[in-house]
Length: 505
Ligand SMILES: Cc1cc2nc3c(=O)[nH]c(=O)nc-3n(C[C@H](O)[C@H](O)[C@H](O)COP(=O)(O)OP(=O)(O)OC[C@H]3O[C@@H](n4cnc5c(N)ncnc54)[C@H](O)[C@@H]3O)c2cc1C
Image (cartoon, rainbow, N blue to C red; front, side, top):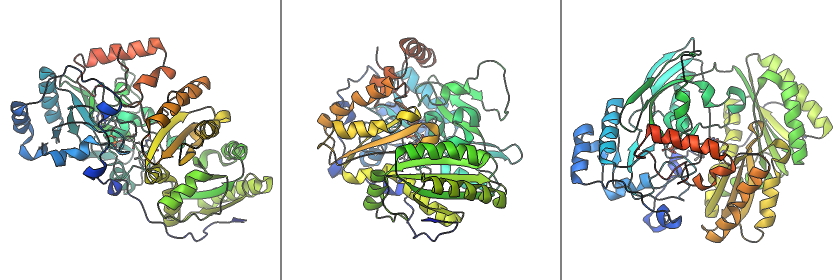
């Protein structure tokens, strides 16, 4: 039975991404270079005089060389990749970044830019001994224009901190994701992160007004404007948005922050079939129009394993599919009337079997927590093969069924969830521990299937270290050639994030 607004939902504790990262030397992931059989390129090798030079630029305590202190910066969030870096540098200013890069370029020392290290494709950690350039100390807000909504800040600001800050001025960040408590805005820009608000506010190519970046040779590129319109030549900022630290490092960004919505409601529904999920999405767009701000789905196994693995409580019974619909507007009465009319119709037609709707912030948080924790829950099964693909909506869920059939008897769990409104599905395949046999069954099979459907092998997580060899499934030869030309032009020595994004010739 559908319950109208403000059903009491049992408390679910908030899971902060950062607090879950634990490192135990007993369970270190294998070195990426060995696991994936990669050969080191002919970069320079860091020595004591290089370290001393970095100390002269940054001061002693911002050059980390102790092996156990460096370890967390070598391991990615899903504990799949492990690099062998010997040094982590923590600049505080653009000038310091510029000096460091200029020096590294002259000595051909490879560099791995790193934000909050929440990336899911191994791009944020070194493969061999690349120097980790970590932005966590570049974390200042520079200015906020609360009329235009232009926020200017340093690259190392944590997304959730920025959201809390701009909310004090009746604004919100145009993006939101499960890793918000740890990821940096510089990392978000460098991965062109999508997330839960993309349906409403579009991707970062639209919301980033300007940025400052440093090229591999230390040149500072100042495109830090806050204008909505600026058609003066090439839009260089776009080169850095989504290039995953391979063309330059982002040091400052200007983001357009939309006004906070005064009336927000969140519905969480049980649905019988995937066809019903699609019908519900189509009807939501028509009936809710401008107040529809998120439309997310998760299958039964995604929700049930999250609830079980993280000891959460599902406010709904078991259903084949779950849908989250968020509305955001500025007139509570108008919006809830619209939402209730839509929901009554969808209940009657049977697209919704059961559900709950709330506009109380704490209860909405509780529901979002279930959805946002799906990414983390799979880690509790042992190892997760994570895929993040775009597929035309009619075939959106087929891939999950195909994989369950293909991998029968070889997995703990396979489930699909994601941003229906963006045609983006996340597929998690969990196993007790990493298995090359399962990996070989999955790859390139899953990318071949996605390519057949004219989808993208990476919807929002990027290419990173894990997917360069598969990029051709989504980009043709001419596009790849131009990407390589750009890389050569901007980073002729290839020192920025090597082994990532582009496949070797
Ligand atoms: C629980 C969870 C949920 C997630 N949900 C989503 C989601 O909904 N949508 C989504 O898109 N992603 C999601 N992600 C993936 C990840 O959070 C995003 O890719 C995020 O944008 C990465 O930011 P970061 O600061 O952690 O970057 P990192 O992981 O540190 O780095 C990511 C890449 O950007 C580069 N980089 C980082 N900072 C800079 C810089 N200043 N200059 C140049 N290059 C840089 C790195 O070299 C690397 O290639 C999720 C991750 C987790 C763990």
